[in-house]
Image 1: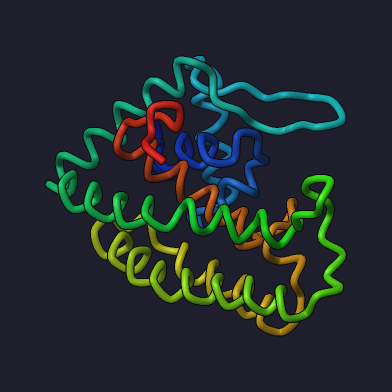
Image 2: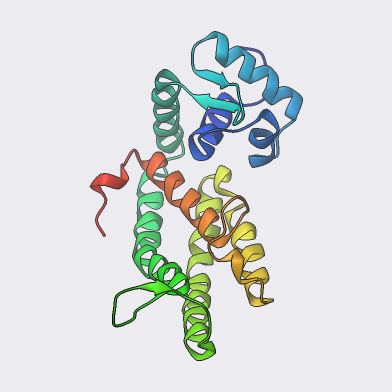
Length: 209
């Protein structure tokens, strides 16, 4: 393959995004969109990625591409002698995962005598308590993302993305807790979780809660 966009980063961006344009892939790791487009074309020829046309279009991994990506992630981890360090950081992240998901649930629904109902945010005291919990989680999560970036450079970016989402939430843009289609706190958190699992070769289905 030609020089240009690193194959690992292109494959991994598609692993994290599932379906993405060349520009989306380039933006994920601050790569040249032109170089990413060329790399995707090469990977397409090799049967590692495929382009989906239609109303929802973009590039996706093939099964072969996913397998190669996983092998490259394992090789990267071992060459950096970072498996132990990333595992420890993953465990620290995992300890925050259930509390964070609890925040998302409590922001969206409330308990009633008839069962859970959509939160209409008519109780500012309750909402403030949920937001305080998110702030506490955020303060603990940032050292984890900073350490991940220091261990493996491709983890760079999660800290600033979480900070950007948190700033919007603090400013009263509460849709940035769980909104889809934007870099909401939940969107970034979910991607980081998948990144850690992929890096360590683990599956959500076998993960402890």
